[in-house]
View 1 (tube, each protein chain N blue to C red):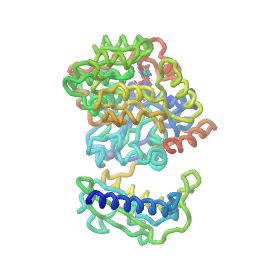
View 2: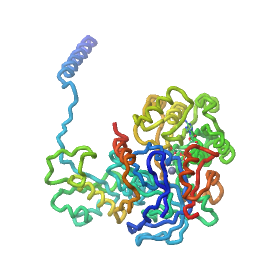
View 3: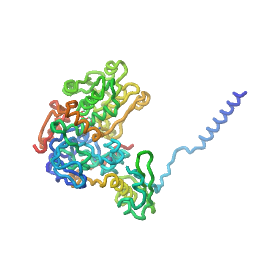
View 4: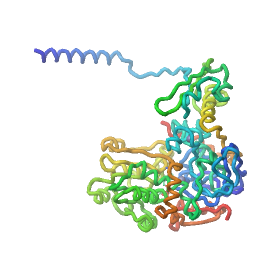
Length: 392
Length: 154
Ligand SMILES: NC(=O)c1ccc[n+]([C@@H]2O[C@H](COP(=O)([O-])OP(=O)(O)OC[C@H]3O[C@@H](n4cnc5c(N)ncnc54)[C@H](O)[C@@H]3O)[C@@H](O)[C@H]2O)c1
Ligand SMILES: [Zn+2]
Ligand SMILES: [Zn+2]
């Protein structure tokens, strides 16, 4: 079958790869209808995520139709139209039963490699390096879904494929940031990053009762999208001093909850610090450019909360430990616990409370995968997410 | 008067600290000889599920007499701790992952057996790695793979 593969730093190619097979009784095979780009893929493509191998199929945000089920699949059948969580959860380990699905104990088949990097392994994820299980990604015609009873979610009638698509990754990730960041009624919430994840975090914060939500980015078309579709306030960090602006807009207190949805390739106004981070990262002396994390920690109100959704791979330099400790902040982060939120999000999508289809700014065939990623990576033509249709 | 006594007491205590400090070795040295530790997993099940050795799944029973087994309840709602320890501990040093031939390492085999047992008890299966592979060896891939192995470590 056809698939979009990682072939080295900034190199993608459409290739023929072996068809997936049912390898465990609880597996299903999904015919991929829609599969989309995510900011996380950019970290792989840029070579910042370790343990990629040439020929790895990428992609992890997707939906489709079940075409085969293993003998142990009980709650799904051939023909079901489902959205799939980007992380793989077994549903029965301590982490899964405590709604910490991305930390599943039983789905990372490369646990030794992952332990070497993180101390303990995360759960498996599709198309996201060998340290995260080495599972083939969704930018392909078909994909194997382990523990299909738990990882696939039937799409309600009346919800279109494209409306359901972002319930796979961007929407649950954004929701988790607002939820685990502790957003409550009356809060002022600041969100760094106006990509798919940041926009979904902003909308989730509103639904969870935030009084005001302020989204920070520098791409005018994304900021305009935030104002139009999310109805949140914006700050263009390339023109405005973010910390001073946030202080003014929050009565001198600072935001109650700060959500970071930027990750390891953050940009900033060219100052000494940015050049320092970039050079160190390019020389592989540090993996991260934690610019937005630093800013969030500095700007957050005393006793407030910072939640890191952006992906980081290893060690960060100049982490503001002092401000974090002395201001009494709660700082946390996580890979998304999608299974916890997806059924609830599909309901909200069905009743119109949550909408993400505007993120799909571009649509292409899988053959155009490399071009799609060029547009997405370089934020050309107002691109927020490219949707691929592997079957045309 | 009391005050002076207190002062003297403090002074004496201070001198004690100085003596203790000067008698301390100048650097911390860790014992690096490998120890035959218990290899442990925690299984999300009630301790009754593993009440006897006969209740243990095949990956563990296969190890036979090569290991001692320990089973105890985990605190709170965390399930049951299952441990195994080699009876005959190899004296060779178990070194870093890049130099270790993992298939020959008996401790690794025990760890894998424990993880498989845990997975079977919790989910009824051991998840198999994705197959067949789509990867092919190139220098770029190899380099990143190696770099990655030190990723999060100092
Ligand atoms: N935790 C999870 O499970 C999870 C899931 C999905 C994505 N992610 C991560 O979330 C992050 C965002 O994902 P996305 O798909 O929205 O990516 P994206 O690349 O589409 O968006 C990132 C946005 O951040 C903006 N940005 C860059 N530097 C900034 C700065 N200093 N301040 C404010 N904004 C800045 C960029 O202009 C861009 O609009 C990525 O790191 C991705 O890996 C995490
Ligand atoms: Zn993603
Ligand atoms: Zn699990």
